[in-house]
Length: 155
Length: 107
Image (cartoon, rainbow over all chains, first blue to last red; front, side, top):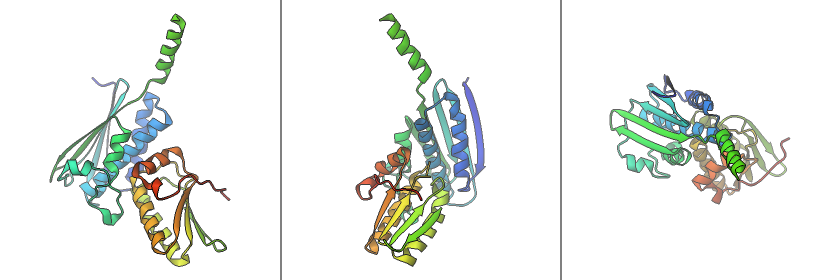
């Protein structure tokens, strides 16, 4: 059904933030993204995983799951936890809004996810957990080039 | 990371050598705050030439150190910043209060 799929499960330890973003980046590399596109994906994953650790599990131990899919030239990522959930998703999405200002959190997590990915869906049930689904279309550089060349040929 | 104090110009130079995320900011925060309270520098300079990745945890860390420097009447600057990291800082509006354009020779 999908062109490719992977699943990742790890403990909600902050040392796994780098592991998660690097692993997802390696998976997304199959689509031959630019360095910038790859940096966007890494940053969005880092934000979602950090949210699960700090807000979802509030630094207690839990499991974070990542499902990655490649559908044609789109990367779809589903990052979920079974932590405490988000009480007000609309508020959480607002730039600079944070419930943890005392920890020097900037409140930019969702804003960064939204600007670096094409689509971000937040599915959260207060008390049960949060699932973030993000999609990013990777531009097909080689095919684009071929298109330009073929158009050039017709002219 | 490396922290050096240049006594002559009262500069605290902080060279960060790892990816900046929630996992490492706690350590950076502790070391930089320790340096600031010990030397009371005129300016703290973050050298980002070896920072290839930063997420929003870095924004909070930088704003925190900016406030601390302001409190002691000093300033903060970030130099040698990559375009990827700059994009994140600009998104937060940090570039309006902290200079990001600077370059500095890495010794």
